[in-house]
Image (cartoon, rainbow, N blue to C red; front, side):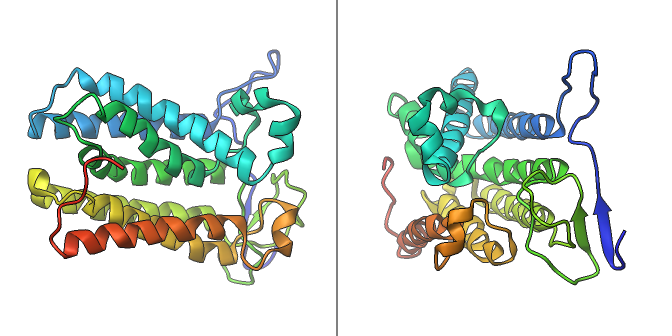
Length: 273
């Protein structure tokens, strides 16, 4: 262990069965917990706002599908398009890793739109405003999963809490680095607490687009900033003025600001994109 650095050599597996060459991962457990807690929250929302409880299972399927396919497709399109061109079936090989939050940020609203278009009592912005509360919590769990996998590491640092990611498989030099996964997990959890408080304050009176707008501004505004102290995910990003994560965050922050401006002016936001 280097002076002033924390050695991080935690196994990504909860346990590992040598005979089978397999074991459940912390990442999978934490990813699933995001959906479990999200489902519990929505049970309360649908009870408070008198919406059909039986619709929850359908919404869960839409959101899971949008999250997995959107995040996977986003990673391949934005970071490794050559893999998708060589073998389109790699899209479904989620176990090989590679998920992008920006892809999920695009696909989840599309999935919600498909869900809400047949449910006039649950318009698009009504659903997505409440959904982003638990998406922020899910982001917390996902970044903790990234930490357990020793992936998406930070840039080198001489700060006393720098981590030595000895299990990192990205072939980066093993030097003290920012634990950017912890920075993001902490911020996303605070965002969850804020959005939850804003919702509980107004519940049915929450202006359409308010929570969605704050989510986009906070999460992707922070994502833009945190990228300055994170290692690039792909080599091609070194030639860009800002990296891919920052480029993709800008339009999402702009959309969030537009939604907040609409609610501030008192105009009713549309119920569909």
